[in-house]
Every structure is written in structure tokens, then in C-alpha cells.
Length: 349
Image 1 (cartoon, rainbow, N blue to C red):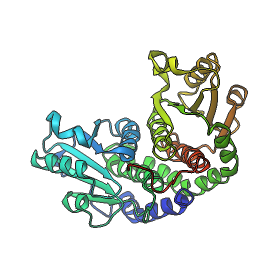
Image 2: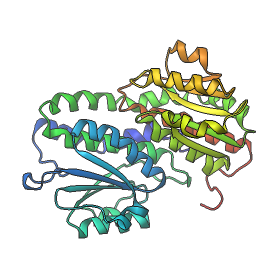
Image 3: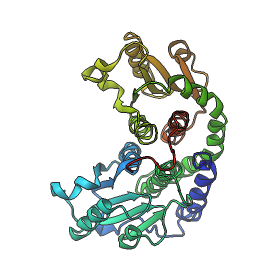
């Protein structure tokens, strides 16, 4: 159910911050997410657990490229044990759906004790993480009953995009860039509706591969974290062994697992990684594995190679992870449901 609520949930996420973005563009508001000039941001840590960590890892790709600041992504459970370098020029972004994730809360406190500024991204108003942060950006995605996060994950991706837009003010072209990307962001809910209209096709693909006990997910760039998230969703609710890998790492071990008919989900969009992904798909096919491709609309090269293709509308590459996550959620859901599992309350979670 929550998978299909995503267009509305993301519209609420955007609606909740439209005034902040518009006033920031007009120069009429001091951005609460920006530090003072004396506390210039020199590095950013993104800390999270599980699905939220995948959202943070996705965000690293556009934050680092656009802000030209070092961005590090840390599992909150490991953050405090390695004595990270923190000071007043460090921004720590804590990402948590519930706002109560124990490891993230401990990491947040450690960051503050060492002088860092903390911004949190959470779905729950007045949660512990929100209260203890210097600033908070709420996702406004509504209650999520299912244990395996779906709509809150894509809402986190949107929230991280908003953070990047607001922090982007320091660059010479920020006003034009922010206006253009904000307009594209506003299109995302409608584009998600188009993706969800393919649910029946995705169900048929899911049933075709539901008997397998192993599955590999591959992607490059910002689609690599989405491959990780797709694998996690399949593990969480269908109890199938699944792994997510950067496609370029196939030859360094994972390809040894492939045999005839092994399902490989390849996120291969019409972007800067396209040719490399085509090469990776050919590597997989040479081992007689079966490829399920997540591709851009009208990609004839992918259609000729993959056994199954799920096509997505084209958006700014930095927004595409929001769309690519959804067919992977549906694949996991339909496989788990077909196998008779409780998709809302998976075992042991």
C-alpha cells in the first residue's frame, strides 16, 4: 500500500518546503540550514542506518559534485568507534525515518560533543533526533506501517535534494541552478505515477523469477546505492539471498556466483554510465544469467540485450534514483507476496 502512496508522500515532502526554497531564491530569508560565515562548512558527514544509509550514500553523489565539499557517508553504528575528525566547520546530517534510531542518536550526540553542527532528516516531528539537532528537515511522508521502508526512503531522497539546493547558495550560479532543479523536482510525483502504472508488468516479471534463491543487483554512480537498496528490500521481505554491487566490481568476485538463469537486476539508464553498464550486462549474459534491466524509455540497445526491461521516464540524472527505487520495491513486494510472506512485518525485524 505504501509503495503506491509515494506520489502523494513526495508531493507532501515538496509542499512542506516550497516556501523555504522560494524565499531562499528571492533572498528574503536567511537559510536556517546554512552556518554563519565564520563557521564555513569544510566537510560533511552523512550518518544513518539501513535504508536511510542508502539514501545518504545516494545523496553523496550530488552533494559532493554540486557543493565541491568533501562528503563522507558513515554507518551510524560505526561512526563513534573510529574517532572521526569533527570541528565547528563540520556539518553532520543524521538521516532516520523514525527519528529514534539508537545508533544514529548516539552518533549525533558524539558529533555535537566534538563541535560539529547537526542537521537531521526525519519523518517524525519532535522525535529524539529532531529535538537534539541544530536544524531539522521533516519529510512529511505520513505514517509508515510496513517495517521495510518504501515511501520514507524516496522522501528522504527528495529531502536530501532540497538540502543540496539550499546549501548550493554559495556557488555563483546557484539561483538559476536551484530554480531549474526545483521545477524538475516538482515533476517527480507525476513521474512516479507513470512508473507505478507498470505494476502489473512488474508483477509478471516478479513471478517469473520468484523461485530463485539468489539475486544480484548492479548499478553505477548514484544508482549503485539503489542497487544496494533493491537487494535489501528483497532480503527483508522475501528472505531471498540478494547482493548489491557496483557494476564495475562484478569481475572482482561476484561474477563467480553466476550460472545459467541467475537473475541479475541491472540499473542501466541513458546517462554517463550507460556504455559501461551495457558492457557489464554483456559480461553477465556471457555467463548465461538472466538480466532484468531498469532502463530509460526507448533504449533499444537495452531491449536487445535484457530478458526483461522496465522502462522509466527521463529526468535530471540526480533525480533518477527516486524513480529507479520504485520498480525494485515492487519486485520485492510481488515476490514476497507470491511466496506467502508477511510483507509488512518480516520475521526478525
